[in-house]
Image (cartoon, rainbow, N blue to C red; front, side, top):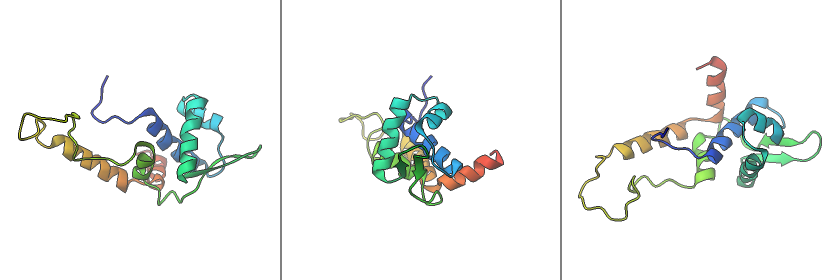
Length: 139
């Protein structure tokens, strides 16, 4: 079944991995995150490497090693993670990716642009810390 807003598997793993690492408040191993997310360790490892390269998380080797946050979860937004994984967003672009349109106005009358902007605002306003607090409350 299709959805209006699509988030890639890699970005979903990045969101969930960072939130899980923040919740554990200590080094977390790839296999633990893999079990929690149901993702293959190979795919997850690539996502985690990308997050390390971006500076969002750090990795340590050894028996006590794993992944930890590199930034304060109160300052890490979902938008920050999204941009690391997907790149900058272009809300002015045609939602149908048309290079040429025979009409003067968009067939969607601005609805797609409005939804994109609302989604971006939500990502920017939502921190990992706020998610963890909301998750503890069950809401």
